[in-house]
Length: 470
Image (tube, rainbow, N blue to C red; front, top):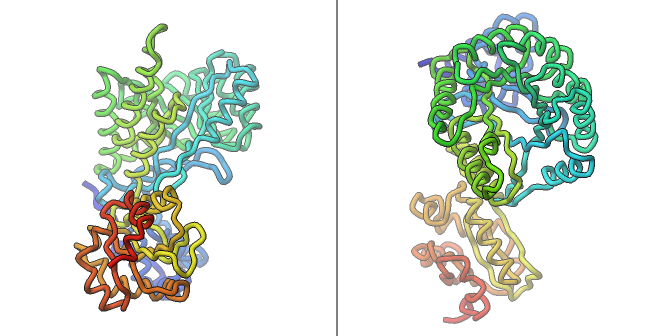
């Protein structure tokens, strides 16, 4: 198994002048952050500015090259970056780019249907622990198999949205027509086979498009095809074939072997992003069968492939109950395992609080905070909430790990400025932090009242004025 570069591998390849242009105190500090991929090597400006460091720069770029190449689909603010992965297992470091969700549109759709579907894809959103979950792109399918019709549909989609676009056909002439209609938009071309790669190489190079290599059921042929395209200067994405239902295990195995070979064995022949097509389950859908079954199967297939390293999913369903499990799963997997999702600490005001309004505190763990926020808003309470920096831990975990102590709470109250906003000194503590009440009273000089363990009870607790009673 290839070892990831450490600070002592990177440091000898730096200028070692400790100039500080990167924002770090010295080159060793830079090397430490670069090894964790929290600071890019291009931040070392002398390395790229001074000719004397050219050889070191080239060696460093090769050393730091991700085992899975990064590929850009689309342009502008909504471009999607896929690949760029460094590790097989998330806890070894972290995953870099979340799986991109592309939703299909048929080129046979009428102008009105096409407009409506594009808008639905763009507008799909859901607020989850402070994050606006969204879809990432559009997969235009050549159902007509007509290059002219496909080009017209591609042009219309390009005019309707600036989302990244994937052009889907196994006919090189159809893809060429679509790529020409989207010049400058960098669409992903799907797909090149052993029979069509030469024609599609010209198309991909001419229009500067990434290209999917497709060799279902044959990983050796897929590697050969991908290597050839890569050597010709094309950004490659891999599709080893997608079978679901009873054959899902084969698909999972193929994706796992490809990513393992890329990250653990550093096999550059397969070090490319992976594309999965849960939409394939609709191919087995029979007329008269309940569509809910196909949607459920698509969700299961999509979840399986997110877990098994898919960098792009091509999906059909836009139903909220289909997409929510997938977007939740993606969000939870593609977070830094050593940095919990957190919100900024400080004072929050709800409703129209005054000098007599209650003061509460909670942790800055995102899930805790947004749950408390939702319950306060739902109850219609006028209140102050002090968000304490617990390094992203929940109340219970923060208390156990000494990230939430009486002194920390007292300091948070002081820094929040809430003392200048109210004429009382009563602090409502989360029920899970009841054991800190006495110590918090001593440290803060506030009277501490223990609130409900579950924030859903805040409304009744405040409404009954329990916090004012002895």
